[in-house]
Image (cartoon, rainbow, N blue to C red; front, side):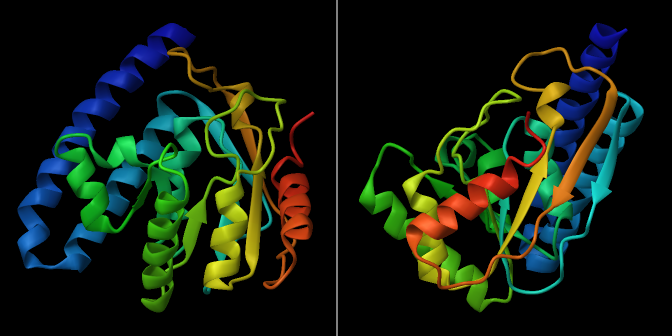
Length: 227
């Protein structure tokens, strides 16, 4: 059953994604608001497929507050990467640059305002990320980042990447940490298991902490649901 669910999800999600990408391209000349509306509809479509096709129920402990925050999320699968678009009002998501280079889809991510980071480019990539994040914050948009840098299997707790502390310092916002256990159902493999995924919103962490302090607190908070 898990294999059948996963095949159906894949067919519906990627065909639907192509549809939404084409709609974004069609409405882009009208303005930014229609683009954001369609992108958020795509995320809602993905969420519906996760719940009703894959059979993954999502339970939240706490709520992400409204306002200008840096939202730090545990990263285990594509699921939370797409669902983050529902975490806040018009959030800007920091993602690997390879995704922003995918034909058509990559253009949509850039048009929406996603920040693509070349993880192999070093300091220059970090400067670009910080500049784009500052612009997003100036426009009143929260910023979402995956501090561990890449998807990790359930139970693993890699160190926070250096770019997180730099971004935290540059934009000067409090951090809302989000932990989850999605990885027990879905990681990088094709087959996704049904079940319940839990999300936990940690205590808001103030701006202005030293690097060691912010990294330690975020690392603990986003891994709160990992064994």
